[in-house]
Length: 387
Image 1: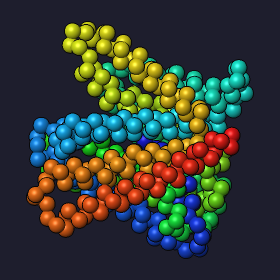
Image 2 (image 1 turned 180 degrees about the horizontal axis):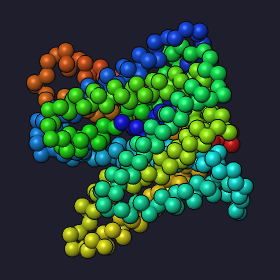
Image 3 (image 1 turned 135 degrees about the vertical axis):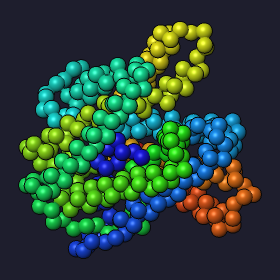
Image 4 (image 1 turned 120 degrees about the vertical axis):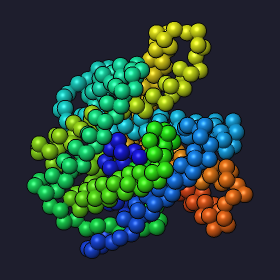
Protein backbone atom coordinates (compact mmCIF):
# COMPACT_ATOMS: atom_id res chain seq x y z
CA UNK A 1 0.00 0.00 0.00
CA UNK A 2 0.93 3.60 -0.29
CA UNK A 3 1.82 3.69 3.38
CA UNK A 4 4.58 6.20 2.62
CA UNK A 5 2.36 8.88 4.17
CA UNK A 6 0.77 10.66 1.24
CA UNK A 7 -2.54 8.88 1.64
CA UNK A 8 -2.89 9.52 5.34
CA UNK A 9 -1.89 13.18 4.94
CA UNK A 10 -4.78 13.78 2.55
CA UNK A 11 -7.43 11.56 4.16
CA UNK A 12 -8.76 14.25 6.56
CA UNK A 13 -9.14 16.63 3.61
CA UNK A 14 -10.95 13.94 1.61
CA UNK A 15 -13.29 13.21 4.51
CA UNK A 16 -14.06 16.91 4.95
CA UNK A 17 -14.98 17.26 1.28
CA UNK A 18 -18.37 15.66 2.00
CA UNK A 19 -21.39 17.97 1.64
CA UNK A 20 -24.08 18.35 4.28
CA UNK A 21 -22.63 18.28 7.79
CA UNK A 22 -24.36 16.15 10.39
CA UNK A 23 -23.96 16.16 14.15
CA UNK A 24 -23.72 12.41 14.54
CA UNK A 25 -21.27 9.89 13.19
CA UNK A 26 -22.27 8.57 9.80
CA UNK A 27 -20.88 5.22 8.64
CA UNK A 28 -20.98 6.10 4.93
CA UNK A 29 -17.39 7.34 4.63
CA UNK A 30 -16.09 4.38 6.60
CA UNK A 31 -18.10 2.10 4.32
CA UNK A 32 -16.31 3.64 1.34
CA UNK A 33 -12.87 3.06 2.84
CA UNK A 34 -13.69 -0.45 4.02
CA UNK A 35 -15.32 -1.27 0.69
CA UNK A 36 -12.19 -0.26 -1.23
CA UNK A 37 -10.07 -2.20 1.24
CA UNK A 38 -12.13 -5.35 0.70
CA UNK A 39 -11.93 -4.99 -3.08
CA UNK A 40 -8.15 -4.55 -2.89
CA UNK A 41 -7.82 -7.63 -0.66
CA UNK A 42 -9.76 -9.58 -3.27
CA UNK A 43 -7.65 -8.32 -6.18
CA UNK A 44 -4.47 -9.14 -4.22
CA UNK A 45 -5.86 -12.64 -3.78
CA UNK A 46 -6.32 -12.82 -7.56
CA UNK A 47 -2.68 -11.86 -8.13
CA UNK A 48 -1.67 -14.65 -5.76
CA UNK A 49 -3.80 -17.13 -7.72
CA UNK A 50 -2.09 -16.06 -10.95
CA UNK A 51 1.35 -16.47 -9.40
CA UNK A 52 0.42 -19.89 -8.04
CA UNK A 53 -0.76 -20.95 -11.51
CA UNK A 54 2.72 -20.44 -12.97
CA UNK A 55 5.74 -20.58 -10.67
CA UNK A 56 7.90 -18.80 -13.25
CA UNK A 57 5.97 -15.53 -12.78
CA UNK A 58 7.86 -13.16 -10.49
CA UNK A 59 6.46 -9.66 -11.02
CA UNK A 60 3.35 -7.68 -11.90
CA UNK A 61 4.63 -7.32 -15.47
CA UNK A 62 5.14 -11.09 -15.70
CA UNK A 63 1.49 -11.65 -14.83
CA UNK A 64 0.47 -9.15 -17.53
CA UNK A 65 2.70 -10.94 -20.04
CA UNK A 66 1.30 -14.36 -19.10
CA UNK A 67 -2.26 -13.08 -19.52
CA UNK A 68 -2.02 -10.98 -22.68
CA UNK A 69 1.46 -11.54 -24.07
CA UNK A 70 3.89 -8.74 -24.89
CA UNK A 71 1.06 -6.18 -25.01
CA UNK A 72 0.08 -7.11 -21.47
CA UNK A 73 3.64 -6.64 -20.24
CA UNK A 74 3.99 -3.27 -21.95
CA UNK A 75 0.64 -2.09 -20.58
CA UNK A 76 1.47 -3.19 -17.03
CA UNK A 77 4.96 -1.66 -17.18
CA UNK A 78 3.60 1.62 -18.58
CA UNK A 79 1.12 2.02 -15.75
CA UNK A 80 3.69 1.01 -13.14
CA UNK A 81 6.18 3.64 -14.32
CA UNK A 82 3.40 6.23 -14.56
CA UNK A 83 2.46 5.39 -10.99
CA UNK A 84 6.06 5.79 -9.81
CA UNK A 85 6.53 9.07 -11.68
CA UNK A 86 3.25 10.67 -10.60
CA UNK A 87 3.62 9.49 -7.00
CA UNK A 88 7.06 11.07 -6.80
CA UNK A 89 5.68 14.32 -8.20
CA UNK A 90 3.10 14.32 -5.39
CA UNK A 91 5.83 13.52 -2.87
CA UNK A 92 7.88 16.46 -4.06
CA UNK A 93 4.88 18.78 -3.87
CA UNK A 94 4.38 17.61 -0.28
CA UNK A 95 8.04 18.29 0.43
CA UNK A 96 7.68 21.79 -1.04
CA UNK A 97 4.57 22.61 1.01
CA UNK A 98 5.90 21.42 4.36
CA UNK A 99 9.51 22.56 4.06
CA UNK A 100 8.74 26.27 4.01
CA UNK A 101 6.48 25.78 7.05
CA UNK A 102 9.17 24.14 9.13
CA UNK A 103 12.00 26.44 7.91
CA UNK A 104 11.05 30.11 8.05
CA UNK A 105 13.75 31.41 5.74
CA UNK A 106 13.57 34.36 3.40
CA UNK A 107 15.51 33.41 0.31
CA UNK A 108 15.39 34.70 -3.22
CA UNK A 109 17.52 33.86 -6.24
CA UNK A 110 16.63 35.12 -9.69
CA UNK A 111 12.92 34.31 -10.06
CA UNK A 112 12.96 31.45 -7.56
CA UNK A 113 11.10 31.84 -4.26
CA UNK A 114 12.20 30.56 -0.86
CA UNK A 115 9.99 27.42 -1.00
CA UNK A 116 11.33 26.57 -4.45
CA UNK A 117 14.95 27.02 -3.39
CA UNK A 118 14.45 24.95 -0.25
CA UNK A 119 12.77 22.18 -2.23
CA UNK A 120 15.57 22.16 -4.77
CA UNK A 121 18.10 21.89 -1.95
CA UNK A 122 16.25 19.00 -0.31
CA UNK A 123 15.94 17.10 -3.58
CA UNK A 124 19.64 17.60 -4.33
CA UNK A 125 20.45 16.20 -0.88
CA UNK A 126 18.34 13.12 -1.64
CA UNK A 127 19.66 12.76 -5.19
CA UNK A 128 22.79 10.65 -4.34
CA UNK A 129 20.49 7.92 -2.96
CA UNK A 130 19.47 7.15 -6.56
CA UNK A 131 23.01 5.94 -7.20
CA UNK A 132 22.68 3.19 -4.58
CA UNK A 133 22.78 -0.39 -5.83
CA UNK A 134 22.76 -2.07 -2.44
CA UNK A 135 19.19 -3.23 -1.85
CA UNK A 136 19.77 -3.45 1.91
CA UNK A 137 20.55 0.29 2.00
CA UNK A 138 17.44 1.04 -0.06
CA UNK A 139 15.38 -1.15 2.27
CA UNK A 140 16.73 0.78 5.25
CA UNK A 141 15.55 4.02 3.67
CA UNK A 142 12.14 2.44 3.11
CA UNK A 143 11.93 1.35 6.75
CA UNK A 144 12.82 4.88 7.81
CA UNK A 145 10.02 6.20 5.60
CA UNK A 146 7.47 3.87 7.21
CA UNK A 147 8.68 5.00 10.63
CA UNK A 148 8.15 8.63 9.61
CA UNK A 149 4.58 7.75 8.58
CA UNK A 150 3.89 6.36 12.05
CA UNK A 151 5.45 9.46 13.61
CA UNK A 152 3.07 11.66 11.61
CA UNK A 153 0.07 9.62 12.74
CA UNK A 154 1.13 9.74 16.41
CA UNK A 155 1.81 13.47 16.18
CA UNK A 156 -1.68 14.21 14.87
CA UNK A 157 -3.15 11.93 17.55
CA UNK A 158 -1.12 13.73 20.23
CA UNK A 159 -2.43 17.07 18.99
CA UNK A 160 -5.99 15.77 19.26
CA UNK A 161 -5.39 14.55 22.83
CA UNK A 162 -3.22 17.24 24.42
CA UNK A 163 -3.00 20.01 21.82
CA UNK A 164 -4.80 23.33 21.92
CA UNK A 165 -7.39 22.17 19.40
CA UNK A 166 -11.09 21.65 19.94
CA UNK A 167 -12.10 18.28 18.57
CA UNK A 168 -15.72 19.24 18.05
CA UNK A 169 -16.28 19.83 14.33
CA UNK A 170 -19.14 18.09 12.61
CA UNK A 171 -18.46 14.99 10.54
CA UNK A 172 -19.39 15.43 6.88
CA UNK A 173 -21.83 13.00 5.31
CA UNK A 174 -20.52 11.15 2.25
CA UNK A 175 -22.42 12.34 -0.82
CA UNK A 176 -22.63 10.39 -4.07
CA UNK A 177 -22.02 13.43 -6.29
CA UNK A 178 -18.80 14.18 -4.40
CA UNK A 179 -17.16 10.86 -5.31
CA UNK A 180 -15.18 12.20 -8.33
CA UNK A 181 -13.28 14.77 -6.27
CA UNK A 182 -12.13 12.39 -3.52
CA UNK A 183 -12.18 8.88 -5.00
CA UNK A 184 -8.68 9.23 -6.46
CA UNK A 185 -7.22 10.07 -3.04
CA UNK A 186 -8.79 6.99 -1.47
CA UNK A 187 -7.75 4.67 -4.31
CA UNK A 188 -4.21 6.05 -4.25
CA UNK A 189 -3.97 5.19 -0.56
CA UNK A 190 -4.59 1.51 -1.33
CA UNK A 191 -2.42 1.31 -4.44
CA UNK A 192 0.44 -1.04 -3.58
CA UNK A 193 -0.33 -3.98 -5.85
CA UNK A 194 2.83 -3.67 -7.92
CA UNK A 195 4.94 -4.93 -4.99
CA UNK A 196 2.70 -7.82 -3.90
CA UNK A 197 4.06 -10.32 -6.47
CA UNK A 198 7.56 -9.66 -5.10
CA UNK A 199 6.22 -10.17 -1.58
CA UNK A 200 4.57 -13.43 -2.65
CA UNK A 201 7.84 -14.76 -4.07
CA UNK A 202 9.79 -13.71 -0.97
CA UNK A 203 7.45 -15.55 1.44
CA UNK A 204 8.55 -18.85 2.95
CA UNK A 205 4.93 -19.98 2.86
CA UNK A 206 3.12 -18.35 -0.09
CA UNK A 207 -0.12 -20.06 0.96
CA UNK A 208 -0.43 -17.38 3.65
CA UNK A 209 -0.31 -14.59 1.07
CA UNK A 210 -4.05 -13.84 1.27
CA UNK A 211 -3.92 -13.73 5.08
CA UNK A 212 -1.00 -11.30 4.91
CA UNK A 213 -2.91 -9.03 2.50
CA UNK A 214 -5.97 -9.11 4.77
CA UNK A 215 -3.89 -8.06 7.78
CA UNK A 216 -2.07 -5.37 5.79
CA UNK A 217 -5.18 -3.75 4.34
CA UNK A 218 -7.01 -3.99 7.66
CA UNK A 219 -4.23 -2.08 9.41
CA UNK A 220 -4.04 0.56 6.68
CA UNK A 221 -7.83 0.96 6.57
CA UNK A 222 -7.93 1.41 10.34
CA UNK A 223 -5.10 3.97 10.31
CA UNK A 224 -6.55 5.96 7.43
CA UNK A 225 -10.08 5.92 8.84
CA UNK A 226 -8.88 7.09 12.26
CA UNK A 227 -6.67 9.76 10.69
CA UNK A 228 -9.46 10.93 8.40
CA UNK A 229 -12.07 11.39 11.10
CA UNK A 230 -9.55 12.68 13.63
CA UNK A 231 -8.37 15.39 11.24
CA UNK A 232 -11.92 16.29 10.18
CA UNK A 233 -13.10 16.56 13.80
CA UNK A 234 -10.05 18.65 14.75
CA UNK A 235 -9.94 21.17 11.92
CA UNK A 236 -13.31 20.96 10.14
CA UNK A 237 -13.72 22.97 6.92
CA UNK A 238 -10.34 24.66 7.47
CA UNK A 239 -8.38 21.40 7.13
CA UNK A 240 -5.77 21.64 4.38
CA UNK A 241 -4.96 19.01 1.78
CA UNK A 242 -2.09 17.92 4.03
CA UNK A 243 -3.23 17.67 7.63
CA UNK A 244 0.21 18.65 8.95
CA UNK A 245 -0.28 22.14 7.51
CA UNK A 246 -3.40 22.59 9.66
CA UNK A 247 -1.73 21.72 12.96
CA UNK A 248 -0.98 24.49 15.54
CA UNK A 249 2.32 26.02 14.32
CA UNK A 250 4.02 26.59 17.66
CA UNK A 251 3.61 23.15 19.22
CA UNK A 252 6.47 20.65 19.40
CA UNK A 253 4.30 17.81 18.01
CA UNK A 254 3.59 19.96 14.95
CA UNK A 255 7.30 20.49 14.32
CA UNK A 256 7.88 16.75 14.70
CA UNK A 257 5.09 15.99 12.22
CA UNK A 258 6.37 18.57 9.74
CA UNK A 259 9.93 17.25 9.85
CA UNK A 260 8.65 13.68 9.46
CA UNK A 261 6.63 14.79 6.43
CA UNK A 262 9.70 16.49 4.96
CA UNK A 263 11.95 13.47 5.52
CA UNK A 264 9.47 10.93 4.14
CA UNK A 265 9.87 11.86 0.43
CA UNK A 266 13.63 12.07 0.78
CA UNK A 267 13.73 8.44 1.96
CA UNK A 268 11.49 7.18 -0.82
CA UNK A 269 13.15 8.40 -4.01
CA UNK A 270 15.65 5.52 -4.20
CA UNK A 271 13.04 2.86 -3.40
CA UNK A 272 10.57 4.18 -5.97
CA UNK A 273 13.27 4.40 -8.64
CA UNK A 274 14.69 0.92 -7.96
CA UNK A 275 12.24 -1.09 -10.20
CA UNK A 276 13.11 1.09 -13.17
CA UNK A 277 16.81 0.97 -12.30
CA UNK A 278 16.83 -2.83 -12.09
CA UNK A 279 15.04 -3.10 -15.43
CA UNK A 280 17.48 -0.60 -16.94
CA UNK A 281 20.51 -2.62 -15.83
CA UNK A 282 19.02 -5.78 -17.35
CA UNK A 283 18.67 -3.96 -20.67
CA UNK A 284 22.31 -2.84 -20.74
CA UNK A 285 24.83 -5.10 -22.53
CA UNK A 286 26.54 -7.72 -20.37
CA UNK A 287 29.86 -6.51 -21.78
CA UNK A 288 29.53 -3.28 -19.77
CA UNK A 289 31.39 -3.09 -16.50
CA UNK A 290 29.51 -2.70 -13.24
CA UNK A 291 30.95 0.79 -12.82
CA UNK A 292 29.69 1.90 -16.25
CA UNK A 293 26.23 0.52 -15.51
CA UNK A 294 26.19 2.36 -12.18
CA UNK A 295 27.11 5.65 -13.87
CA UNK A 296 24.41 5.25 -16.54
CA UNK A 297 21.87 4.29 -13.88
CA UNK A 298 22.84 7.23 -11.68
CA UNK A 299 22.75 9.78 -14.50
CA UNK A 300 19.36 8.63 -15.76
CA UNK A 301 18.00 8.53 -12.22
CA UNK A 302 19.31 12.02 -11.51
CA UNK A 303 17.75 13.38 -14.71
CA UNK A 304 14.50 11.60 -13.83
CA UNK A 305 14.40 13.24 -10.40
CA UNK A 306 15.21 16.70 -11.77
CA UNK A 307 12.29 16.43 -14.23
CA UNK A 308 10.04 15.47 -11.31
CA UNK A 309 11.33 18.47 -9.34
CA UNK A 310 10.60 20.85 -12.22
CA UNK A 311 7.09 19.49 -12.67
CA UNK A 312 6.33 19.62 -8.93
CA UNK A 313 7.42 23.26 -8.73
CA UNK A 314 5.35 24.11 -11.81
CA UNK A 315 2.13 22.44 -10.62
CA UNK A 316 2.16 22.69 -6.80
CA UNK A 317 -1.36 21.40 -6.15
CA UNK A 318 -0.98 18.40 -3.88
CA UNK A 319 -4.58 17.21 -3.52
CA UNK A 320 -5.33 17.42 -7.25
CA UNK A 321 -2.06 15.71 -8.26
CA UNK A 322 -2.73 12.95 -5.74
CA UNK A 323 -6.31 12.50 -6.93
CA UNK A 324 -5.21 12.38 -10.57
CA UNK A 325 -2.62 9.71 -9.78
CA UNK A 326 -5.20 7.60 -7.98
CA UNK A 327 -7.88 7.97 -10.65
CA UNK A 328 -5.71 7.66 -13.74
CA UNK A 329 -3.21 5.02 -12.61
CA UNK A 330 -3.80 3.45 -9.19
CA UNK A 331 -7.37 2.34 -9.96
CA UNK A 332 -6.13 0.39 -12.98
CA UNK A 333 -3.26 -1.26 -11.11
CA UNK A 334 -5.31 -2.06 -8.00
CA UNK A 335 -8.73 -3.00 -9.39
CA UNK A 336 -8.96 -3.34 -13.17
CA UNK A 337 -5.79 -5.18 -14.21
CA UNK A 338 -5.80 -7.92 -11.52
CA UNK A 339 -9.38 -8.90 -12.46
CA UNK A 340 -8.59 -8.80 -16.20
CA UNK A 341 -5.38 -10.84 -15.77
CA UNK A 342 -7.16 -13.41 -13.63
CA UNK A 343 -10.07 -13.86 -16.04
CA UNK A 344 -7.75 -14.28 -19.03
CA UNK A 345 -5.43 -16.76 -17.30
CA UNK A 346 -8.25 -18.85 -15.78
CA UNK A 347 -10.77 -18.44 -18.61
CA UNK A 348 -12.86 -21.58 -18.88
CA UNK A 349 -12.34 -22.45 -15.21
CA UNK A 350 -14.25 -19.54 -13.63
CA UNK A 351 -17.79 -19.94 -12.34
CA UNK A 352 -20.45 -17.59 -13.66
CA UNK A 353 -20.91 -15.72 -10.31
CA UNK A 354 -17.14 -15.15 -10.11
CA UNK A 355 -17.08 -13.96 -13.70
CA UNK A 356 -19.87 -11.48 -12.95
CA UNK A 357 -18.04 -10.29 -9.83
CA UNK A 358 -14.81 -9.62 -11.73
CA UNK A 359 -16.61 -7.88 -14.57
CA UNK A 360 -18.44 -5.72 -12.03
CA UNK A 361 -15.18 -4.71 -10.36
CA UNK A 362 -13.64 -3.85 -13.74
CA UNK A 363 -16.68 -1.74 -14.64
CA UNK A 364 -16.68 -0.04 -11.25
CA UNK A 365 -12.95 0.67 -11.48
CA UNK A 366 -13.28 2.02 -15.02
CA UNK A 367 -16.12 4.38 -14.06
CA UNK A 368 -14.29 5.48 -10.92
CA UNK A 369 -11.16 6.14 -12.95
CA UNK A 370 -12.93 8.08 -15.70
CA UNK A 371 -14.97 10.39 -13.46
CA UNK A 372 -12.04 10.87 -11.08
CA UNK A 373 -9.58 11.66 -13.87
CA UNK A 374 -11.95 14.17 -15.45
CA UNK A 375 -12.66 15.85 -12.12
CA UNK A 376 -9.03 16.07 -10.97
CA UNK A 377 -7.82 17.18 -14.43
CA UNK A 378 -10.38 19.98 -14.52
CA UNK A 379 -9.34 21.10 -11.04
CA UNK A 380 -5.65 21.09 -11.98
CA UNK A 381 -6.26 23.13 -15.12
CA UNK A 382 -8.52 25.54 -13.25
CA UNK A 383 -6.01 26.23 -10.49
CA UNK A 384 -3.08 26.37 -12.91
CA UNK A 385 -4.78 28.97 -15.10
CA UNK A 386 -5.78 31.00 -12.05
CA UNK A 387 -2.17 31.43 -10.90
